[in-house]
Image 1 (cartoon, rainbow, N blue to C red):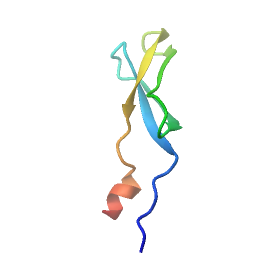
Image 2: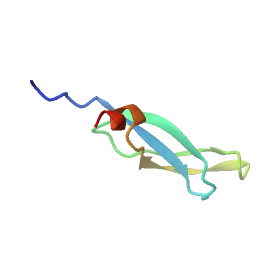
Image 3: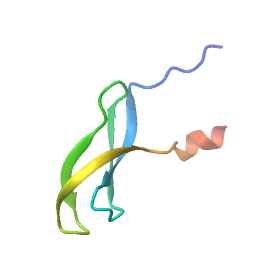
Image 4: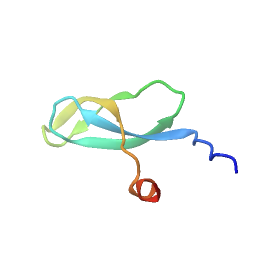
Length: 65
């Protein structure tokens, strides 16, 4: 049986550079550049830079292994 192919998109976590612990989750293309975006951080009540950190495996996928 052939191995399952990887999806076209990745689930990534955008973490605040203000180090408040606040994050957004989003999808990006697997072969695209890593994400960085200026978004609103409600803990400091201003817009700050968010940088990408890869999200951990989904619980359902981890439970299968």
